[in-house]
Image 1 (cartoon, rainbow, N blue to C red):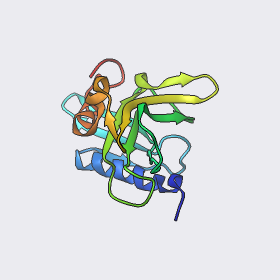
Image 2 (cartoon, rainbow, N blue to C red; image 1 turned 180 degrees about the vertical axis):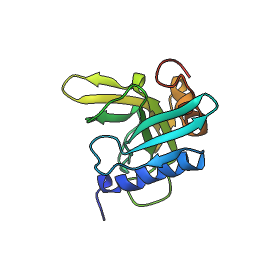
Image 3 (spheres, rainbow, N blue to C red; image 1 turned 60 degrees about the vertical axis):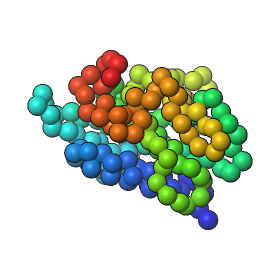
Image 4 (cartoon, rainbow, N blue to C red; image 1 turned 120 degrees about the horizontal axis):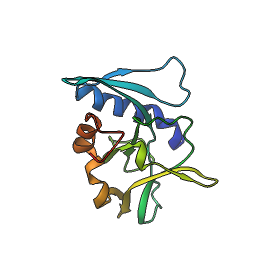
Length: 157
């Protein structure tokens, strides 16, 4: 049985697939040195470009309820228009697609002294991730729609 971190390709391809289904063009880099892929979307106001970093979250069966749940760790590259995509799986074992996915803008990623970066838009309740109320606009279909707005990196969506 592979370790949870070895399923990262599935998380990346899952998010890329969702974005592709929503009309985004997806470009994978020759070398992955930070962003997992670049997404572009042609709108009536021009082309949007979003560097995307995906961090899949895979809880173990013994994970306890948490008020704050998300990604804490290193990010090798940052960009004002980036998307930190957080697919929340229901288990660390091979199984179905994530229960929910957050599409987080750069401004919601906080530097943590000695720990890298922190972005915790969900809570963990009774074995599954749920959006925290103030972050629900970044989850699933509404979150993916927000990524396609021209104010994504600068202000509230």
